[in-house]
Amino acid sequence: MDGGVNTIRPLLIAFIALFLEVPTFACAMVKQQVIEDINQADFIVSANVEKYELVQHPEYKNAEFALFTIKIDRSFKGNLAGIQHVRWHNSTFGLPQTRPNPQLILLAGNFSSDSDEGLPQIYPLQVFQISCSSAFIFPYDRQYEEQVWRAVNGLISWDTLEDALYAEPVFSPAISSGSTPTESVIGRENQNDDYESNFGGVFSILAAVISSGFFAYFGFRLFGPTRRDA
Image 1 (spheres, helix red, strand yellow):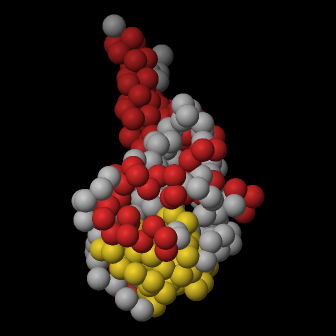
Image 2 (image 1 turned 180 degrees about the vertical axis):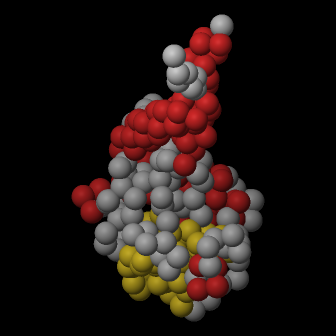
């Protein structure tokens, strides 16, 4: 009986490890962007992209984030003006290597919290992005200025702007370093409607299984049956 329990114990440890490890890796499924979620952002602006660069994270080695230097064209929400710096991690999909295609963009973002590893003090503005979905960065044309203002103020639905916001890619897929380009990168019309698992998701599951195997092995060594001398 004890042998059976000792055999099952490492398997239980493996399953526990699997559930603990999966969330730490890339998303297994890409979520379709819901344009109405933009209302959750702290600020929404149209802006000229003055500079786009990849910056090494000050706290973590071999980690980087993208930094937009933008000149505010119009602040629809959040009362921003002048030159601003907005950071973007995009950890699920990876970061494009070069600046956006359009010079003028519509960008939604948040004011960062103190939990962001020291970065709020340096770059307090962050691109708004729902977990496992694409960032709220869109091509922008001033002819839609009135519609954007009305959508921000709840007078019309954001759905009426979908054709304009997804009309062209913000970043070219050829220069994206991510595992799967997202709507704001290549345009919604180019996405798989079924949003099947991407390579990053498969990798995360495999990594979780491997790591759980290590947990199982060491769990067996620590808690498994001990050798008894004859």
